[in-house]
Amino acid sequence: MKNKNMNVFFNGLVKENPTFVLMLGMCPTLAVTTSAINGLGMGLTTTAVLVLSNVLISILRHVIPNRVRIPAFIVIVASFVTMAELLLEGFIPSLYSALGIYIPLIVVNCIILGRAESFASKNSMIPSFFDGLGMGLGFTVALTAIGMVRELLGAGELFGVPVINNVLAVLSSAIGRSEPIEYVPISIFVLAPGAFFVLAALTALQNRVKRKMQEKGQNADKIQSGCSFDCASCEDSGCAHRFVDVNAPSGSVADAAKSAQNGKEE
Amino acid sequence: MLDVVKNLLVLLVSSSLVSNVVLSQFLGLCPFLGVSKKVNTAVGMGGAVIFVITIASGVTAVIYRFVLVTFDITYLQTIVFILVIAALVQFVEMFLKKYVPALYQALGVYLPLITTNCAVLGIALTNVQKSYGIGFSIASGLFTAVGFLIAIVILAGIREKIEYNDIPESFQGMPIVLITAGLMAIAFCGFSGLL
Image (cartoon, rainbow over all chains, first blue to last red; front, side, top):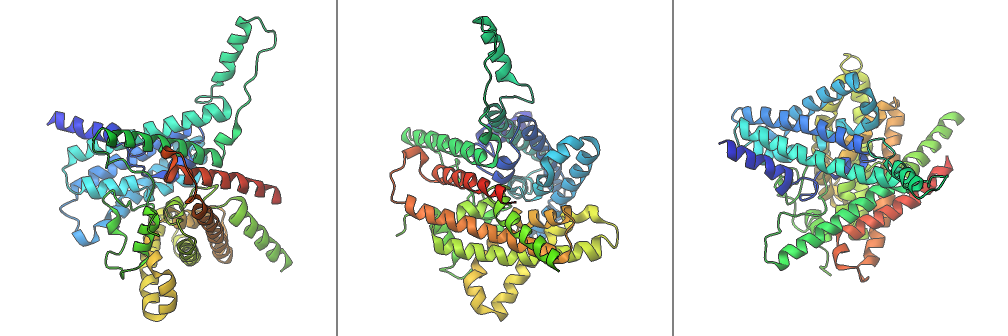
């Protein structure tokens, strides 16, 4: 039993890491990773919401009627997000103002609704808790890592400590320079374009890993790059069909969009 | 009167270009990357986003002003807004299907794709945060969505050209699109000198 929970936990943390493997929840990933501390704060807030909503949804899974489950999930998630927002505002105001509008937007983070739909609504409380914890911490690790890269390149700092300049100062005194060499930060990395470039590098790496895995004959279907149309719904991750009208007229944009995504029809 | 016009112009430039919804705020990134393969579909998506966001900003502003503020329950805004927006999009879709079939033909199929889009909720919350009145909320929604249309159409135009280029194997697909978006974001940074 304990072993199984551990498996569920590490599945979210590593094997199905929501950011690096499944590519879910990209809006907050890009927006708040201007520094490692912001990424960490956002990740932990999302983890708290994810764990609590997973637990509550798994407890209520036999009570919520199937047809209204999505609105019910949204209300549960939104309640926890509101609590998290009020708590942050009260106790960690610096993080609250740094994350700003992206805290209430945790509601539409598709990791949360996706896990509610695909895991918590089908499993009992304990596994759902570990699933939420694993997925949430996987997201946290990813956001912190991306934040560290951006902060290091864009400001020369890590968690607010000017690491590069400290190292350079030691090095320059070691080689006997009176004036220490200064690091000139590539400030574009903490601005909006930097987010796109870092994510581009990440997806390129992902593409490469996926290709290598396919060459070795391993199953790489889990690795997704790109997103769907709607932040709270995630095509190919088992939760898009809920929001997208399956009975939409054929030849519709659901198809057009799909072919647009797949490309080479023409 | 002149003051209002001036404020609206400033709002137009700032919310459609300077702090572009996708390129500097990262809202609505999913349709931006997902439906930008061809210019036609990009225009359709942009139109649907304009339609939904303008209506949603108006409705949420009215609800905020007359329900949430009146009963002093503004802390419930996230819950109320997300439910209102989800219901509203469904309702708008049904209404268009029945009464404005021409518009439904053009936009209808895109509407369900953006039911719970973060851009819609994000703009509703931003309007509250900046304490805009109802009129300004609608204008801000409209202008922000126009910014989305501009960005997605430019990206689709570039992607149509990229199709013919020889791209390193690992960068094919999403990575090259993200790099394109990054370069566009740099270009849009230049607009900040306008204000």
